[in-house]
Length: 89
Image 1 (spheres, one colour):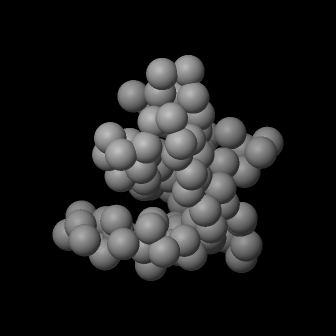
Image 2: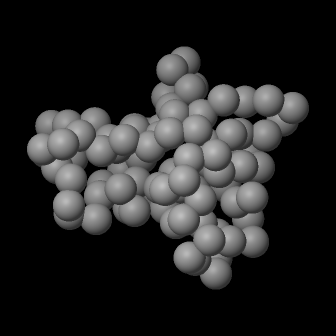
């Protein structure tokens, strides 16, 4: 599963079984604020949300962005990972 950074729509997307799971963000003062994550109902309960968020962290880190988790779920994924806890505020 690959995450695509859709800068025009300020979101990261990952296609799974023909459905798009997304992380929406806002850029402000040089930081990316991760505001909302969504996995379509049809593909929930498979761990896709966590994969989406972690792959989003990898992508934004590779692209040189600093990020702040606003969404509660995204905060939880960052907080429960030694790797991302230090990077995602």
